[in-house]
Length: 500
Image (cartoon, rainbow, N blue to C red; front, top):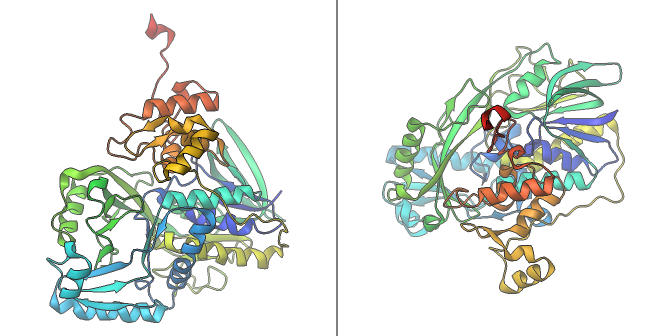
């Protein structure tokens, strides 16, 4: 019997797990993928939104501001990349200037500090690459950028160090309500398992409606909304210094242009509703749209510097229960176009954390605290005396000083063996990624923890060596090493008949 089962090991689920790990609770995180950060949390803009866009009075607005204000301190505590670079919303038409004023007023109502309107001259001085088409802009100095993988993995590792169990390759197939809680049935590779728990937290991303509908008569529907991106080489990473948005539309914040915390340039996302909940393929049409609309913000982005494209899926709620009181303390009419976070009225002890699309990454620290407060009211747990509040990330040879590199090599000569030339990632870093808490078991897991394979050649050089290291450390044949999901093999063993 667990006290709490969290379904989903994305940034929301891991933030909740980390906050609940402060208490004397038996907690299990179930994740259908082989690692944390395999869904929406791995494929997004990496933006910490200032909080001016969400509708005032919504939960989304409240958690956005709170999460944004917590992020910098959290990055120091848990050792993940974060940079407060400020964000700018570009206006391209004189008649739309009043929309900038409305956005500024909305942000101020939400509690965002130091917002101001820039005229064309001031905008050109602050961000020279963005001055050609824009006539004015809204500047939010509290906007920031973060590594989405670094944040999610740090939260998960710290939760695990504080006693939270993680079960991967475990897809929830059914949930039944019992006298003292819930029975959660999972499919784990070729077997099935049943876990008992007092409280269930549904943080399943684009699958949150399916999980919700297993226990509630008041149905929910989520439509995945695909966003395609282009990532550019570091040789143009300093083309802009701020995150550049365009005035928002009904489908989101439009195409952005932003530096990343690792020194690349990123453009995107598109917004297209999908039926396929695993449909993260990129398209010629989507890429063309990103190129065309990004050029409105920055006209001289060299297309030849694109090193990869990718797509992510946002969990967009398209149908809510007709009843106004489907969740405790939430009015159905008020949660339209908002996050759905609450205990289901017809399923006590079952908490939905659903519809966490943008700015979900920014909100994550506050979402963790908000859901933790709900669980505290339900279970009345006591605080741990030995909670571990900090976590140390993997040393980066690329970012270390000569003195720090020398010390690492003295401690372990594997730090002198460069595996990924593009990002200067060493064997020592890869071994650390495998051996640490919730260590990597796939090449994507290595990539997200060390950046091996994220550079200009996109793993063309380093991948065979990464596979070799993983196989040796995990005690597997190289043909058993996966990129990410169940069927993402690199090598297939030759059958006896084929060999003959």
